Amino acid sequence: MTVTALPHSAAPKTAFAIIFAVAACHLINDIMQSLLTAIYPILKQSYGLDYVQLGLLTLTFQCTASLLQPMIGIYTDKRPLPYSIAGGMASTLVGLIVLGFARDYWLLLVGSALIGFGSAVFHPESSRVARLASGGRFGFAQSTFQVGGNAGQALGPLLAAFVVVPHGQSSIAWFGVAALLGMLILGWVGRWYTAHQKAAASRPKASTTLPFDRRTTIVALVVLTILTLTKNAYMAAISNYFTFYLIDKFGVSVPLSQTLLFVFLGAAAIGVFLGGPIGDRFGAKFVIWFSILGALPFALLLPYADFTWTIVLSMFIGIILSSCFPAIVVFAQELLPGRVGMVAGIFFGFAFGIGGIAAAALGAVADSRGIAYVFQITSYLPLLGLLTVFLPNMHKTRTA
Image 1 (cartoon, rainbow, N blue to C red):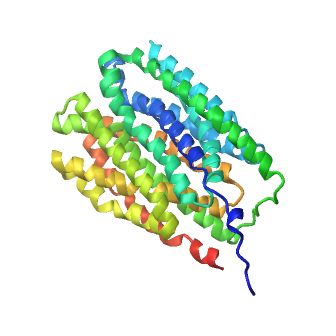
Image 2 (cartoon, rainbow, N blue to C red):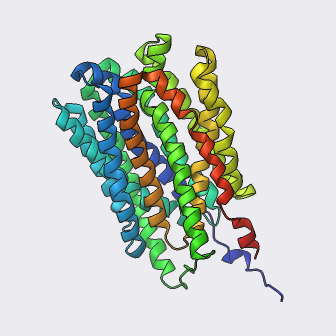
Image 3 (cartoon, rainbow, N blue to C red):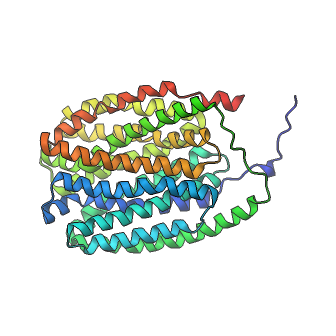
């Protein structure tokens, strides 16, 4: 049978401006949310909080996002809401103001919940926009979108060290200016999204037929879920407690510990960016194999390294381990075609939820056994990357 190629004009074009716009707003969104964990040393000292209370702050933020994201994603798969992403940024703005001027612990919880709600609204629709604008370069679009978030998570501790630490808790509210800028950008993205919807209404709908049988699909989704758990539980240990680990083990200052957390999170952002294009070239399964198992030897060495090697190893872990998440999301979206919002909501939401649960649990472990013990037990988590063997071969399906 002869297959006639589509004319070049019919090929979908990659809307780079839209992809970079949602990535930039992802950066702003995640700067806002990472400020919460970045100011933990300040809150611990000012309010006399223990590690469990700090973990509960993370749990409030993460669970607000994780419980709502899948529901929002499922709803917007049926009824897209182009301007909801700007509304999510507005919730984040209010949360920042509450965090900046809170004087009681319960208000810190309210601010955390508002920022979590903003993330719950932002992520599913923004991930859908990135895929719609990809022009078929799904890995590139997803990794670019995600690297904005990782860059924001990396900049948060740095901004906390050089802005919030010198000027106090109220300076968190200053970052509301960036949230306002994000709302303006997302309003423009919403107009593009609306126009794209109108243009797509006249075209046949994409197939939602599953590429594999029901059992294979369920097994693959369970494996992807466990791998996401592995990655995010380990990342939660470093993101939430790396500063305390460095202070406790090596006696570094708070600003230096925040700067070194920025180095780790910056390495993670590089890994996310590399993971998407590599997945487009070699397949998502290859990236997942390399990412989680590749980080294992560095994770096992980290708890026993001196100061210099701790920094070096944390950079390798950040680059290698973080490269898997764009591949996991793209793999799941191809397993469940036509359900982009649901997949984004589940995996971004699940990522947040697991991070919050892990942060609370690890906080309890740190209180009872010490912060160093946390890094010893979490170093074995990448071993679960062996479950990748149960993922189906998506490349063969595309070829067929």
